[in-house]
Length: 125
Image (cartoon, rainbow, N blue to C red; front, side, top):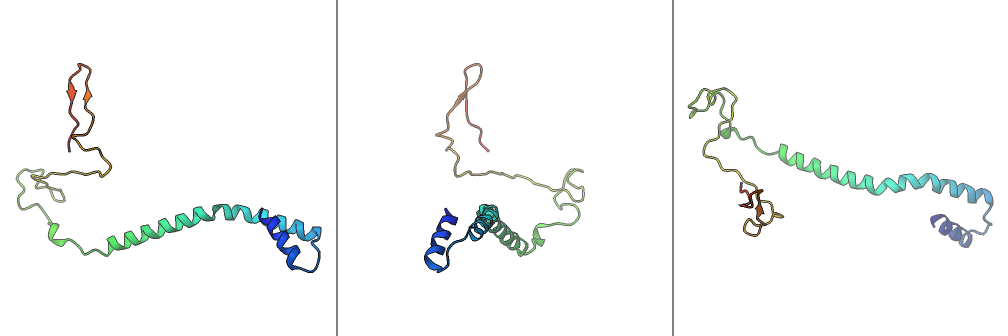
């Protein structure tokens, strides 16, 4: 469609006639440009995603150091030999969880039956 529009514009604007050489050259140039223009939106999207990633990494790397949370050597409250190992991570009385905004509420979740027909409650984290 673009070559046809270009030819119509050329005919209406220019005083000289459209020759076969100009027409074939124009069609060849449009064929050469078709491939890069097909990938232009995808390349633009990749550029935007890369820019967002770089901004997020820069924000993370600009955060202050957490020196108060890091203890060099053994943990002061370490009890067992495994906990006293240098470089270990000690966690006591911890609770971890993840709340998925798209997840179904536990009370609304469908209950499943096992092979014996007993009801299995959904697992909670």
